[in-house]
Length: 255
Image (tube, rainbow, N blue to C red):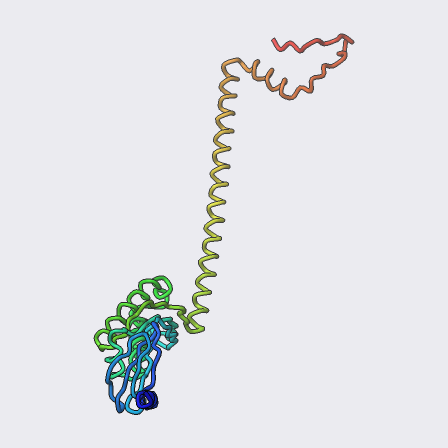
């Protein structure tokens, strides 16, 4: 019994344990070289001959802002957010190739290479108008570059957070917007004036038509009914009390 306890105690001196959770994998190195990969759970190893390096396999964020160029040779600063994770089935390969510096060694350079390869295909105005198209192209290009490099880094999402242009370009855009607003204002004023002119012409035509009808009626009725109508239109409803001969006038007889 004592010998068994002594053996177990000796084993504990030489062996350690590593608790690996679901968000990581354990790369086991023996004398500095890859030996095996610990899966999630409690793992035991010889602490004198082996070392455990934890590699995250959960989704992480890499934010980058770099200087690039446009099709018309203007400077543009592009800011991106890239969500990625290490392929949990290939942590041994990525560690053997890049160590723990895979972000700085392969991911960041490929992101920068992607951005500087695509923005020169667009002028600044197109970058603002075709943002989703550019984002999609960058995401697909980055995935292809990482696959070609055998990086074993999987892209979960790619977002362009900002296009920042030179001060001169921003001033030119503001001036253009002011010009467009002024042009729109002038267009609206012209539309209003044209409408008012159309209304005046229509009213003049209507007045002319009324006058023509009145003249026609005047000709047909020898002017009597027309004169009576105009008299009634202007009559205030009161009859003169007396005339020159002091007689009451009941109604004017125009016949």
